Length: 305
Image (cartoon, helix red, strand yellow):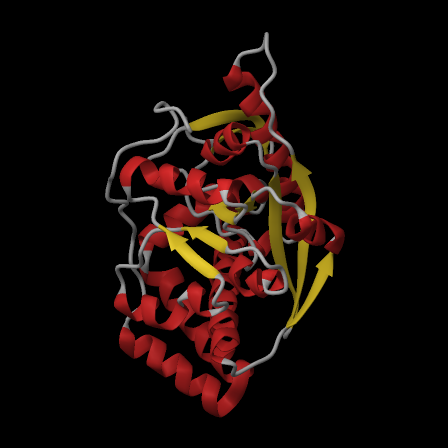
């Protein structure tokens, strides 16, 4: 059981809502009559609107942009912000097109042996996803394994988003665990891991959970949540880093290249050991954003103390 210092009681996670029923309907029509290109064309106009008028969205994006492109200057930064908005929108459109069956996407797997290893093992597994690339569209990669998959994610308050982007419609094996429940959902997470399930958790979004500083992420110390590693160590299950990048109009490359086995060792503070595991995850994340700089959607300041 996870100790009380790594989880919190039931709480409401505050998020900024964007998008409405009319907006999603318009994108659906564009997708229906003009395909992905038509939806992307409309998106290019919408992204300009957010760039010009959504000051909060620009501010949140700049934390990453200034770290990833330190010498870009004002206009270079604005171009990077626009490209990030554009890419994030394309990923959302792709996800919707995929779950509705409007478009088929080619998912090219790297290191498939790890997924087979996860499926064959009697033990459970923590699948560590991130706000980079498009992990939602890559979830069907787990359709062929016999394990149940649980996503730790908050219920969507925005009805338009909930109806259009529901991730649990991808596969009947997928269930949701809310981090707004008692102890951040940790009790249920521990239970299903003990039953041999796969539990998907975000590795870069803190919300109100505990975090640890890693020595460097894009050149500066940064904070990342460590609950996933602490729970994995307590349950004696591995952590698999799961990333997916858009590499073509209808193509994604899915990577499960890193498998981490968190095991506490005597004689060394647990927090120091956790920091090492989280640092290993941060290094994988840094490799990804260096390769795909406009597919990083960590729109909060992880570098801030």
